[in-house]
Each structure stands twice: as structure tokens, then as C-alpha cells.
Image 1 (cartoon, helix red, strand yellow):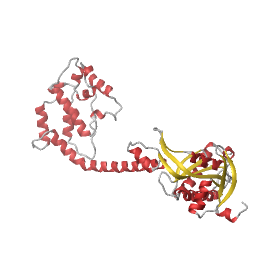
Image 2 (cartoon, helix red, strand yellow; image 1 turned 180 degrees about the horizontal axis):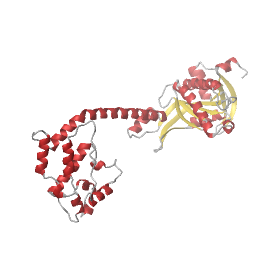
Image 3 (cartoon, rainbow, N blue to C red; image 1 turned 60 degrees about the vertical axis):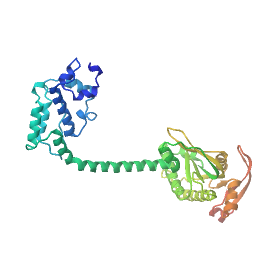
Length: 376
């Protein structure tokens, strides 16, 4: 029965076979019809009945072929204008899919007509088809080359975006379907910054202006990060989190890299302007801490590279307990900058009560302006 047949295979079946309520293995006239449908695919270089590109779906095509009528549905014989097709071949195809089986030419007639199209040379339909294929083979190769270049360009763009969201080593593993194991780092320096009085500043802006403000500010910061061996982990609102010493270890340079980046941030905000608030100035607090840390990728739908450990919490406390325009650092970071590296100057802030940490001695990392103006 028809219900058990593969409906897609009916696209090559003649109308009388589709209409039949009995299982028909085929007929000579039906084979001629199928030959015409196959020839139309070759001539037009499209799927059978242009399925997927036309407005008609599989069910509707089969229904209209089965219905027949004075002007039955047939594939469109629209060939590539750059390829010469023998008009006699097109007429032959139309005769072969005639609605009435008796009007279709027999195979002997088809063979004779194809032979005459070849100027009397012996041949078959495939000989003619191969001649057509040779005409556009070169064009096809060029089209494949263009599409390959376009694909490579799009892949390059997606890789650039991916490497901005995740460390390269992590992104490469995820692209290969490999799991990313948590990694422990003995010593890294964590950077936190926050826009001072951001809530007040945002209240003077529309939501779109807030987005543009943060985008301009973070774009400035991103440029500075690229100049140093630091990694931007994430931004949360007006908060900015960076690290050095991970995901690529760099010995004891992590504290120096973060310090120089912090100086760059403070210099940049001196010239930063808000287009819609020309009289307002942006200021930031910066907090640094050095210590061990663990990194890992969290999530599947939107994987995030996250940092874990008390070092991250302490750096956040350094920022929240800092002062506008100053770089507030822990005793550990102070030791790295003044003892191990040795070329930086700091100022003790004394003992400060840090939430969740108790009393800690903290320091301010002095910029060139701080050194020139000790009273600041």
C-alpha cells in the first residue's frame, strides 16, 4: 500500500503509479517518466523538484502530481544561463513526463533522439550530461574556493571572539570537546576596581547612557590590559576583575604587571570624559592582593572562567576598603613590590579592620604623583 512507501521516493514516480491503490513494481512508461525527473535534476543542478527551495513541500508536490489535470505540475527546467543546453533535450524531457503514459516516447525513441543530438555519434543521456558538467566544473571549483575562504574567515572571527571570552588554552580544549580540569596556582596577584559613587553617577544617565559610559571606560581599560601581562577575568556592573600569573604562570612578575596596569588605569581616568556629563569626572578605587588561587571553567551553556580562593576575597576587600584614586594593597603584595621586586614605594595605612578578615596592616602603592605630593 502507498502508506508503507517512502514518500520521498514518490517524487520520481509517474502519476498513474501514485494514483494506484495497488502495489505496482513499475512500468516501462513509468520508467521513462522517472528518467525525465532525473534528467531535470541534472539539467537544473538542483534537488528533485527543487525541494527545500520552492514554496511547495513534499506532501503538496505528491498531491498535485497525483491530481493531474490539463496543466499538471512538473519541475521547472531553468538551467544556468552560462551553460548551453540543447533545446531538443528540453523538449524530449517534457515529452517523457507527459501526463498520459501512451504519449511518452519509448526507450528506443529516446535513445535515437539522444544519438541525433550527438550528431550521429553513439551515446546515451550520461554522455550529454558529462558534456554539460564539464562546462561548469571550473566554475564549481572556483565557487568552492570562495566558500572555503568565507568559511575560514568566519571561523577566524568566531575564534577571536572566543579567545576574548576565555583563555586561549581553555578555549582550545573546549573546541576539541575536552574537559577543563581546575588548576591551582601558588602565587598570583588579583586586581579589583570599582567606580566611585557609580550609583549617583548612573542616576544622572539614561540606561543607554550608562551602557555607553561603561563601554567607553572598559574599552579604555582593555587597551591598557593588552599592554601588560594581565588577564581580564570579568566585569560585574562597574566592577573590574583582573589577574596576573594565570592562566599562564610568570614567576614573580605578576605583582609588577598588576602594579603597572593599575598606574595605567589611574592615568587614563584623568583624561576620561563623559560626553553627556562634561562637568563630571570618573574616579576609581583599586585593591590588590597576592596569594594562591584556583581557576576553573563553570557551566556548559555559557562556560565562564572563574577564580576561587581566599585571595580573590581579600583583593575584593582591599578595593572596598580603599580610597578614591588610590591603590590599596595587602601586606603580601607590599612584600612582593618592595622586597622581591624592590623598585616600588608604598605607604603604610596602619591596621585596618577588614570585614571577614579581622585587623590587617595594609598599604597604599604610591604613584609618581603621590611621591611628588607626600601630603596627598
